Structure formats: C-alpha cells, structure tokens
Length: 580
Image 1 (cartoon, helix red, strand yellow):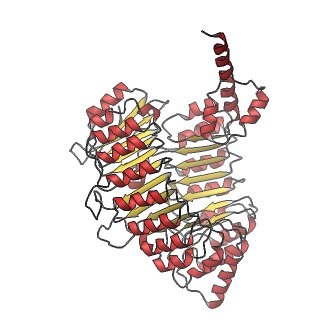
Image 2 (cartoon, helix red, strand yellow; image 1 turned 180 degrees about the horizontal axis):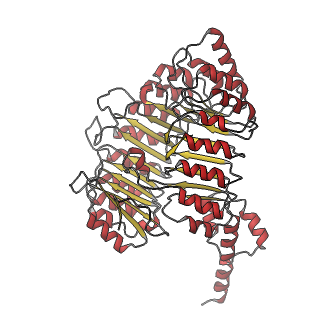
C-alpha cells in the first residue's frame, strides 16, 4: 500500500479538535434538530458537546423513545415538541382512548427539567390534571401549544392562566376540548403583561370579553391574537385599537349588524394595523362587511379563509388587495373562478390549500376542478406546496400543472370520490402522478388519490428519490405497488395506507426498510394477523401494534401501526391494541 495514500486518507478523516468550551459555543448556534443529530455522530467529543448544549428536542412519536431515555441523553432541555397519535387519527381511524397521554412525560420532566420553558404537543391526550401539574411544577414556563390534542377542558386552561406567571404563548388549535366556559381568561393575574401569542380560535363558548380586553391592553408585546367566532365585529374593533402592533390576527364572526359609525370605526382600526402579515377567521364573512379587511391586506403573506365559505366574486375582490400573498387556505366554495382571481393577483404564492366545504356529500357538483388548479399553476410559478380537494381531475392537467411549477416539495391531490379515473379519458390517474414524481425532483411529501394501478407506485419507486412521506387511500392493484415504494424510495420516513389491496407480501417486503423509517400505518388492507406476527418476529426492534375492529370479521378488519423504538413495547396500551 502506498504510504502517501494512507497518510492522505488519514488527513481527510481527521476531526479538528476544539477546546470543549469553544466547541460547545459553536454547537449552541445550530438550531436544526437534524443538523444537531448529524453533528453528534462526528466524534465522541462532538457527541458530548451536542448533548450538553441541546436546549430543544423534537420527538416525532411519543412511543419511539421513553422520557427517561430523553432525559439521560439531553440533560439541559428547555423546550420540547412531542407528537402522539398517528396522523390518520384526524380522520377518526384511530380508536378513542388509544393512548399518547402526556402525563408520564411531564412527571419525568418535572424531575429532570425543572427549568422547562416550552411545550408543544400534537395529537396527544392532555388531561386537566396534567395542565395543573404543568402550571405548578415549572416555575419558568413560558409557552404552551396544543394542536389536535384531546382530554382536557377549559378548567385546565384556568390553571395555566393562574399559575404560569411568565407565560408568553398560549396556542390552542383544533383540539377536542371540553369547552365548559370562557371564564379562564379572567384567571390571568391583574398585573400580567408578558403574553405575545394568544390563540383560542377553536373554542366555542363565549369568553369574558372584559378580561380579554384588559389582557390585550396590558400585553404590549402581543403579536399574535386569534379569537373565536363569538367575538363580534364591535368587540374586534376595540381589541384592534388596543393592539395595533399585531402581526397575525384571527377575527371572530362577521354576522353582527353594524351602524355606519361602527363600520367606520372598524375600518379605521384595520387601517391602524400596519404590521399585519397573517389573517384568519372571518367566520360567516358577508359581502357587506368583508371590505373592512381590505386596508389590512396590503402586506399580508398568509390568508387563511378555511372557516369562511366565500363565493368566487368575494374572494376575487379580497385577493386583489393582497399582492404579496405567499400562503392561501380556502374552501372550495370559491370555485375555479376564485382560483383564477388568485392566479391573476398573487404571483408570489407558494402554498395553496383548498378544503372541501362539505366533504361527506358526494352528490355536490360545485367546487373546484382541474381548471382552477391549472390557472394557479400558470399565474403562481413559485407554488411548491399544495393540498387540493377536488371533484374531478385529468392526467393531462396534472402533467401541465407540474410542468408549470416543477419546484413542488409537497403535492397532495385528493379526488373526493374514491377510485375516480381521469374523467375525460376514463383511464387510471397513473400518468398524472407519474408526471409529478418525474418532474418534481425535490418532492418530499405526496398524497395520491383516484383510480390508481401498480404503475403509479412503480413510478414513485423509480423517480421519487427524495420522498419522505407518502399517503395512499383507495388505491393500488397488488402487493407489487407497495413493494416498489419500499424498494425504491431511500428517504421514506412515513407511509400511510388505508383501504388498499396490499397484503402480507407487501407488508413483509419492507423488512429491510422499516427500521430506517419513523412509522407505517395500514388500515382496511389485506394484512392478516399472521403476517403481522411474522414481521414482529423478524424485526424485534420494531413495535408492531394491531387493532381489530370488533364488529368486522373479514380479512380487512385490522389496523396495523409499525414504528421503530428504543423503548420497547409500550406499557399503557388499551385492551384493543395488541403489541406483537
């Protein structure tokens, strides 16, 4: 062996040695959890430095690791993001009382992280007792975000408001909350001034408006305020006058009738909000009062109208005032004409989400089609994130859309009727989704729908080399489709499948893949209990959980959740969850 080559190789693999304090200072400047994880693999010294300087930890599955393991690995955590139930729980596919309770985590955090400042939970079960425990045990606690959580009531919010004296953020979004009363807002101390983010848009009860007005008046650093639909336009005006510094606003209902003087006062209040860049809410927005929003639209980058069933003409008038819009969420009541107005007025648009106003009525003919999507792709060439619910689509339209916007990283197309083909040619939608994965080389998330054969999944496996998350519903022809995905997508982390014909052969084809993924969900597929047992035997480091629908006896009654874990089988599984 050439000694010079050996010396060059050693030089190329040598890790620069820094003093510990210098290395820790450098690593403290890295925020990305992925980058920090990569850094920890460089050497033992870097591992230890990263360990001691880590202040935030992200846990994508609360059963992938135990709180004790997290505490041993990272002793100085101040902020935790924790996710619980599988995403399909949003569609009621995960049975009630499945698990993902946060209290065991809080008990460990209280002992190991008494200086914890931030907790962000998604799809976790949170009880009032847990919120009271949180408020009592963490004296420097500052930020609480609950997204799609359940199990608690406004009594728990009272404890947070009463005892978290340094609170800067209270963000309550889309939770299954027992909304007992709105008196929790009056529990903030009289001299409380630290709040920067307050979001209670998803709560349904009337709130104590006097307490809310006092809170908004005192918190001069308040930047984000999202109220529920019970706040009237007159009350909104009073809040805006007291908080012109807001950067994000969620309005209440637009149903109130205003006098001419009240309308002028509200319009003047919106004119005074010079810093708004995000606007949401607008429940029951009407032609009469929607124009009061126009003065606030000039600098908007995010407009969320997913609670406002606007017709196309009203959306057209609104977006004409939004030249800098980058993100737009709407209901399909805007129809294709509304999307054409978006294409004409919002050239900087990067993200579009179109939700169904009535997802369960298959007979409705209105909504959006391929024409609206095509228009947006022509007028908004920076578009890279889309969630699009529609009644019909064609392969040719999808191909043209991705040709116009080849930079898609997130492409979720939901054709509302399961198994719907290209409505012009009556062919499967294979070539449309094939065009997506061939053209969009940076695609990270894909949701497929419509009539699809194994060819779609062959295309995905062959071309989607950066794909991380794939959602499949009512699609596929045989086990080969799923096999193509597992064999061909090297970066795949989450695979979600429902109502598809994949069986044991497909499931077991991923033996070499699952330990590098975060999770696999399969429901109403052709997987059997024996297939799940075989997977569990051959991959003991995976948790293979099986849930059976008790009222079904066919071969598609199992729900299977597979995920990697360093904590072993969970100890809180209910009787209907069997860990193999």
